Amino acid sequence: MKYSEIKLSSNRKFGSFSTLILLLVAGYCFWIDHIPLSVVVITFAISSAIITAIKDSMLLHPNKACHMLAYIMAKIAGTFALGMLFFLIFTPLAVTMRLSGRDKLRLKPISTESFWKTKSPNPTKGSFKNQF
Image (cartoon, rainbow, N blue to C red; front, side, top):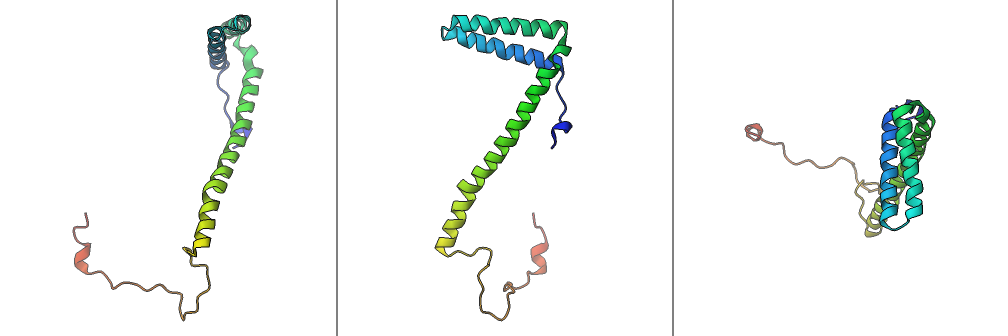
């Protein structure tokens, strides 16, 4: 998916969300007794709420920047998660199977006349009735 294909949320929703996050951060700062920092963050939260209520078009560029940051973080996190899955699960499993001599895909050359698997006898017609 390209960044140009991503649909931005509305500026009002972005402003409301950022106000909520700033209020939560201010509450946490107040709770751990960082009063000056909580006053600064609450000032930003109030200004964000006022901008959202009066002229939410001012939040277009912060909204785009936030979405771009989220897009970049998703690209990095997805790649990292797939790499961890490969190197922590599939690679040790493959090494263990190779060391134990298991050849699940039958990749080792064998000296037989045919590579066809032997088949069990054909099922009877009666086994196809009342299957469930």
